[in-house]
Length: 129
Image (cartoon, rainbow, N blue to C red; front, side, top):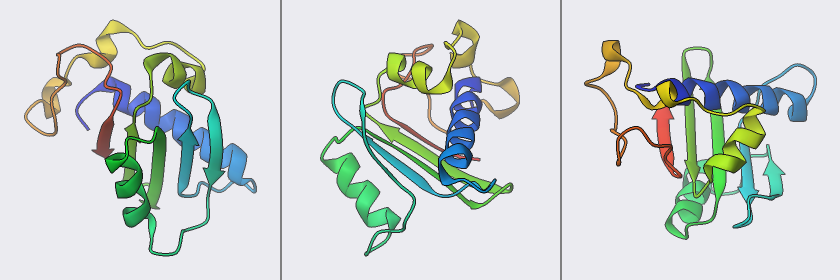
């Protein structure tokens, strides 16, 4: 984790997972979107072949999606998205990003990917917490 926006998206994905999965649990969640940012499907059930195969296929085919996997929460959570516009992500979070969200956290600045271009929301990203 290197940027505040990563925390904000992770918190929103966790809340959404808990709300949609029900019973107060957070589960692995995959949301597939159309190119306009509308959700087409939400999946909590592990697909045949596993999450890794499916999410790689989606990423390779540039299918817009968000993947949230609290596989060993609270210690480890994997979060990734592909082709998600900033406006869509802000709508899902229920709040806008701020400029400071895209500035590296100095305590972790040497770890993880860098924004290209710096200071801008990435439409595709992956981060381990």
